[in-house]
Length: 441
Image 1 (cartoon, rainbow, N blue to C red):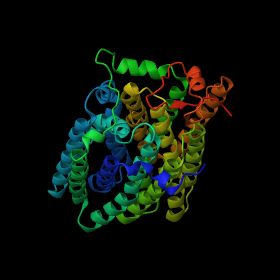
Image 2: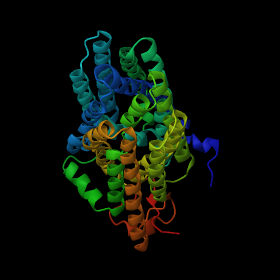
Image 3: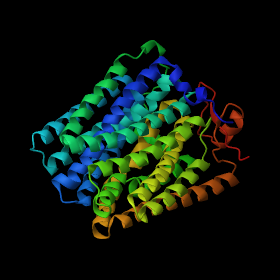
Image 4: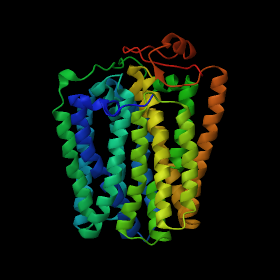
């Protein structure tokens, strides 16, 4: 059944979600302005097209997702999420302003970027699981899948706008101002969090302090073959495939000899694809395991086309296809893992998801950067393509294995809850009555 336009944006009916979404969009645009400017600063101003340095920055920025994993999920499950978001968002805004001041003052050095990237990664490690699970407090269980998809739409609409804006800012007044603008953009999300109607926030089950925190979350995930499969797929693609700051910047600078404007346009072309992928997810009524397989296969094909691209225009089209596939994979994994996890365990499960998806970057980004330096950017994209195909193989193996046991996820439904629960003994019925339909039809 196709969703109506009203159904596509149904989460926006609530005041709290509308307010949150508006503030998040402004902040997300600023975030993408900074990401683009930071990669360009390292690649062209602080080094001479050194892709390995970009890989180190990515490793430092995303490494804390894995390093702090024993604590980030437990914090999200046990403490007031709105206050946590106020703290993490304010911290990230201050760090952006610090990098901007250093750059505008012409004193910034590569080690400054390394340190600030690591600190930003630490704040983001605590922010990510809280931000993802806080959505349930804004819309409730029934509209959670739609809200998750709309969040991704906002993030990727910003990804479409931010890099192009960054290219214009860098060309006109310099990269330092891009960081300052991002720092100021955090004011929007801080205001939205401050003015939420607390009485309208949905109750979220909190984890008891006596439970074993990270260990309990790890045990819970390990007991679910479906969750394990998703995490393996995310690790492979996240470690070697989602290194587009390296892919796009090196292809733009080394292969096509483009300036900052061209780099921004290429980044935006991928963002158009990711935005479309997010909207497709929002229009569906329920997530499906088979979308993980489709997303992985198309991701591998898209990276292959990008590696073989003869012109910047062809490369941009390949990035668009890859963007749709990447969001299909990541959005489906997000919705499936949230909707099939006990509410009191969600923070830890989502922290594992984020940690696995991004925590491999410290290993993958330097490797991909080294391949780009040693063999060329096209070979680096070949590594990304291989990650998509490997993830697809994992999905195929697990899909057929679980189908034979009649345990494959086929979406979320209100009917057949008892049958679903019998297939997943570790899954408990939530207050809203949602359950996973595990019957292959």
